[in-house]
Image (cartoon, rainbow, N blue to C red; front, top):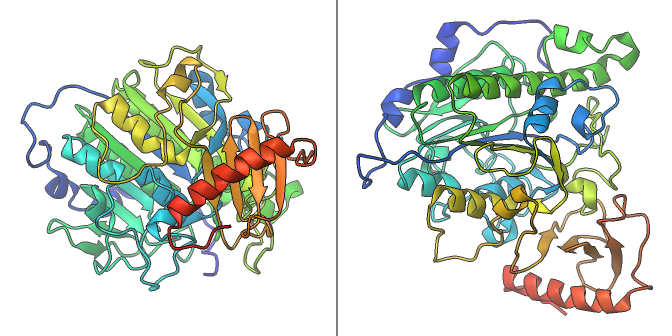
Amino acid sequence: MMPPAPRRSVSVPAVLLALFVGAAALVAGTGPARGQDAAVPARLNVLFLLADDLGYGDLGCFGHPAIRTPHLDALAKEGLRLTHCYSGSPVCSPSRAAFLTGRNPNRLGIRDWIPPNSGIHLKRDETTLATLLNRAGYQTGHWGKWHLNSRMDGSEPTPGDHGFKEWTATQNNAAPSHQDPVNFVKGGPDGKPQPVGPLKGNSSTLTADAAIDFLKRHKDGPFFAQVWFHAPHEPVAVPEEEARKYGEDAGPNKAQYYGSVSLLDREAGRIVKALDDLGLRENTLVFFTSDNGPETLLRYKAADRSYGSPGPLRGMKLHVTEAGYRVPGILRWPARTKLTAGSIVAEPVAAFDLLPTVCAAAGVALPADRALDGANFLSALNGAPVERKSPLYWQYDRAISRPWTLALRDGEWKLLSDAAMTRFELYRIGRDTGEEQNLALQHPEQVRRLTEKLRQIHREINPTASVP
């Protein structure tokens, strides 16, 4: 873990923004994707904002008593608050793979976070949401964390190889911290990755600046803009004025975490405001969520600023209990949503669902040559159930919550299982948010029913595994 950067306030000069977005106009151009008609009909725009290690209870609109998040709270009031929003995994890289592919990450061989130089990556032949939208004439851009490869030198696929015409990213965390990072890489005019070099400013601000620049250049759309913030993952660092908002009572480390979430809120708000100022509010789907639950304080020595909150949920990051992958979700799309602004959607919505949902909304065909695990959740925006072919399934073999490494949610029921599928816990999760009442003995018929579904999905996703 890298040491924290000096704690000082810095600005982002225009020259650094130009360096950060690099030769974006040369890489992206303004025309349709190759093979598309020159006239692309007006259609849905998509803005996807992803936090890193943000807990279910870390936002004001999700109940945090101290952290101030006025911009995301406002977004929730203007749109929908998704209270049963799930990531694809309780850990980073698999979750990101689920968002982009609509597939359970265990199918892809991405079963845990990807260490540098490990050779693990999202394979070139996987079809991502960005690739599908790119082919349909969308302008596509990615900024911030990537963490779907182990090297950013071009020897493994980068965002540019997965459908993003413009991109500036880090392999994993911003280093040496979120403040003044030195490890960003961008897609160059020739398509090859190029180191950006040392930057001044916070990574949340830098990525927001680049995304806003993209929105201004592509306001005529359609576009898919993806901002994957590093915050509030360790190593947490923010300008001193952000930490000072929480005073000495919080203590320096907690104040840094709270300030990191507040800065994330401010920068997400700046991006959304830029979108609105461009007149793109009505027909842009804005989706904000987190890649997994909050890090445990001092789980490792340098995690001394990990003060994230799971809210009322059980567990933390790396657990297959609810807090590992149930995350805050906010969605705004005025032109499509029939529910009253500020409504709560309690229908389960998951990372796997993003690809089929956006493709349905954009009129883009789904890939027919591979299994998808997600469902189109557009019906939930109107208060109706989501039709699923199979229950939601999570598998994390290295879970801290062992023996529980497998989880299945089917409607209001949730089953936890060990790897051998010999031990179980059963919860009526719609009523028992904190997984406090194990109903396995009272409802053996539900355990049998869900265990059979669990075995069936597990065999399909892990075809070489031995399943009882």
